[in-house]
Structure formats: structure tokens, C-alpha cells
Amino acid sequence: MMRLSAWAALIFGMLYFILPLVGMAEFSLKMRRGVYSLDAYAKVLADPRFQETFSYSVMMAVFTILFGVLLVVPTAYWVRLKLPRARPYVEFITLLPLVIPAIVVVFGYIRLYNTSSWLPLTGTVTGTNILLMFGYATLSLPYMYRAVDTGLRTIDVTTLTEAAQSLGAGWMTILGRLILPNVLVAVLSGAFVTLAIVIGEFTMAALLNRPAFGPYMQLLGANRAYEPAALAVIAFAITWACMGLIQLVARLAPKPALPVKD
Amino acid sequence: MTPLPSPPPAAIRRVPFKDRLPLHWLGIAPFLVFVTLFLILPTMYIVVGAFRSVDGGFTFDNVIGLNTASIRSAYWISIKISLASASLGCLIGFCMAAAITLGGLPKFVRGPLLTFSGVASNFAGVPLAFAFLATLGPIGLVTVFLKTNFGLDLRMMGFNILSFWGLTITYLFFQIPLMILIITPALDGLKREWREASEILGATGPQYWRMVAFPILFPAILGTMALLFANSFGAVATAIALTGSSLNIVPILLFAQIRGDVLGDPHLGYALAFGMIVVTGVANTIYIVLRARSERWQK
Image (cartoon, rainbow over all chains, first blue to last red; front, side, top):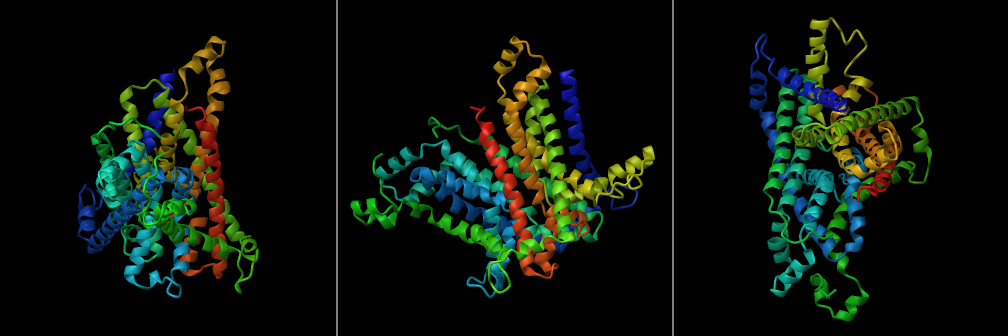
């Protein structure tokens, strides 16, 4: 009886998840009347706007990840090493982007960094790109910080630091050649989440008027019938790939040799 | 603890001076500058702007100005959609999580379902809207299937993907997986001893659930529900891609306001955004408080 209702719950749920995916895949193949074809995909992939916006978003994701790593790894390391009492507060700050809707944050950007302000970032294309990258970095902050902090928990930060220092290493060496390699798996999983977030992000890019993939998808969705479904399949494949890579990386991770201590 | 050298600026100085002036925090200065400039200040600007009049003085007029029929209904519809998708997401997610943890399903089901939940909870935004349009839209898979095989016309029955229920059903696609991801550890934390102890004392299955398991899980469930509520309340992209601007909900209204000042008053826009922060802030506070309570049992 118990097992029967468990199966029922699972099948009902899976049906709900699978139907939209099947619907989207089937719809994307229906562009040519009467037969299934890959016309919609061909059309999307050949669209120069697709190529432009997609590579723009990938570039933004790469910069966001680099910036995020440079910002988060030293901070998380330093908090664990020297400021353990500040940890709850820093953690709270990193969770704020989950509380404050992205649309509110970008609204603040537009008002705070417009052309007549003290830091006119939205005045130039490069400035707006940088602003958008900072926006993406705040969006991914909760995931990045959490991943890195969890990674740091598995190594003995204090002992490693002291050992490196007694061998004459400076802070750059410690961070770059000791801490980063040790939390690389965590950094990578944070990076893939960031990639998944940035590629599909719509609100910030649309309101800052940047030619990103999210606004392109929205525009296409408003004007076409079959291409959006093809885009959705592509986007789903990317999300799936990102999550798959996280799992893969986690599985390949070396098990911590040191006893885990918090 | 052995004294460690401080960051470079402090290293030059003598030790007694360093004791008087703590410079450890300098190590996280870049982080603090970043979050101040690109997270705290922009938000504060909106919050302060919500209480500032055109000439710069303090006023409640903007917040009071939200009390118009159209803005009130936008908040009301947003809250209704969020409540519906959060409670349904909780219910269905709980059933599925219970099925894989306690339902006696074969072991191989669990891993894939959790992985899938990780993907699906991240599959939000514009593509999600497309997937549901292709499924439940006017010529979507399910719509056409029901029409040709059962003669059921969803549209005639009053269903429209660009509506309250359409949006709710779409949001469930990322709400249910999030619930599964959060509640599965809590269900794993139910100790077998509790069940055995209650059975020895003569409790029936429903009694165990009502008097032992459910009270323990209650904070976790309610907390997750608050999180799901905030999650759908702030969802902009899915709503815009799905409905364009045909549905009057808060995120869409704010989006239009930022784009083109549709309310005709910039400060009313701040107040609208402030209202969003208040709603998601309250929901998240509930989540944090209840999560702390529920974790007491998971040691």
C-alpha cells in the first residue's frame, strides 16, 4: 500500500516534469508541415543574432566566473583563517542576493550609476558591460561563496598556511598555489552554476540594454513560433550539461586526506 | 593561537601597535567594497527613494501612493500566484521526496531524481516559458492531444496559459524540485528509533505521523514554503516571456516602470520595488528562522 502510493506520487510528478520537456522537444521539430525536421534548429543556429548574443553571454559568464573566483576565494579563505567570528555575517551578506530580487538591484544600478552620477558606468558600452558583470557576480555570489566555503571546510586552512609560511611562501603563493588547487573542485562547481545562471539571465541584461542571450530569447519568443522551442531545448541542454559537469567534477574530486574539522 | 603575520600593510608595523589597531579585516576589504557598491548601496538607494519626496524631503506619500486599484491588484495577483505555487510545490515536492526516502522505492530511483531536481530548479526564466507554451499553449502538445483524443477543449473550459493558473503551473516546474532538494535531507533525518519507540508505545501509523514526524518536519516544511514563495514572487523572466505584459503582476509592472515610467512617477517606482523587497524579505526571514528551528533535529 505504502509502496503503491509512493510509486503513484513519483509517476505523477515525473509525468508533470516530462510532459513539458517532450512538448518543447516535439514542438521544436514541427516547423516543416507534416514531418519532423530540424529546420527550427538550423534557422536558429544560422541566425547571426543568435551567434552574437550567445557568444556575448558566454564571454560575460567567463568574466563573471574569473571575477567571482578572485573575489570569493581570498575572502572565504581570510574569513576562515583570521576572522572566524565574522563568518556568520559574511555568509549572511552573500545570501542577500537571494532575498533582494535581481530586478530591484538592477533598478538601483540604473539610478546610482547613470551618466549624471559620480561613477557614470552606464555612460559607455564598456562601463555597462562591467556593471552587468558585477550584477551577475552578485547573482552568483550565494552559490560561489557557499561552494568555496564548503571546499575550505575539508582542508585544514590554519595548518596549511603556517606550513607554507614557514617554508617562506607569501600570500600570493599561498592563495594561488596552495588554497586554490585545494578548493578547485568547489570553485569549478560554483563556476558551472554561474555559467548556467549567466547564460539564461534576462532581467539585468534587458534593463541594462545589453545584447545578451536572455533578451534575445525573449524577443524571438514574442515574434516566432517554432524557433523559441528549439532555443528552449538548447538552453535546457546547456543547463543539463552544467549540472552534469558539477556531478562529474565532484565525483573526480580527491577525497580529503585530513580529518574534516569545522 | 600562534601570532601570524598580518596582511602586508600591517607587517611593517610593530606588534604593540597592531594590537591596538586590528587590521585583520583589511583582508576582506575588497569583498566589503564590492558588496557595498553593487548590492547594498543600490538597494538602499531604492529603499530611501521610496521615502523621499520630489524635493528631497522625507515622506510616506510614495508608499501610500501604492494604494491604487491597479497596483493593489498587481500585488494581490502576485501574492496569490506565489502562495498557490508555493503550497502546491510544497505538497507535491513533499510527496515525491517522501516517496524516495520512506516509500520503499528501489535505490536507483533516488539519485537520478535528485540530480534531475538540481537541473530543473535551475531551469527557470525564458526557456521554461517556451517549454510550457509548447505544451499547454493554444497549439501545444497536451492541448492538441486532449482535443483530438478526448474532445476536451482546454480553452473552452476556461484554461489559458497566460493566466493565474497558467503561471502557477509553470512556476511549479522549478518549485517542486527545490522543495525536493531541501526537504529530502529533513526526511532522511527522521530517525528509525522514533518510529520504533512510538510503535512500542502503541501508536498507529497515522498517530506517529501526526504526533511525532509531522511536528518535527513542520518548521522545515513551512520554512521551505516561505522560500518558495519568495522565489516565485521575484520571478521576472518567466512571467514576461510567458505573458508579455498582459498579466498585471508586480515584477512585470516594475519592469515596465523601469523601462518607461508607466506609472508616471519615478518615486512610485521606488515604492513598488520597496514593496517587493519587503515581501521577499519577510518570506526569507521566516525561512531562516524556521530552518534554524528545524535543524535542531538533524544533528
